[in-house]
Length: 103
Image 1 (cartoon, rainbow, N blue to C red):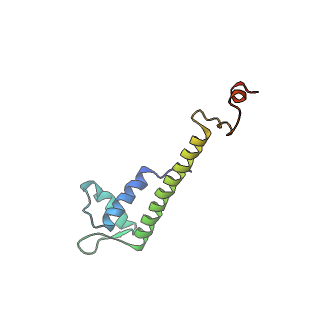
Image 2: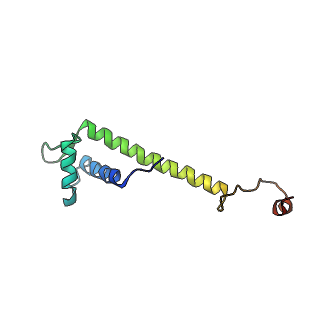
């Protein structure tokens, strides 16, 4: 599974700022305009507002970030269980001498 792209993370950050009525940075003007044109944001009143589509996209991206974090934890756990060198650890209770000599 591919992780979420940096572009999608940037979009999520702008959507969050709009939702929380945090002033946008000057570099966000172009992305805000694209969001208005695509129906994710409306510019009614003092602050831009998320449309229903903008809210759903924001939720979707948040779920994707959470899923990516969970997947990373699973991968880390599997790697830890497999050992640093990628081999499976010896079974518990095995005789250390036979494990070392292969007998």
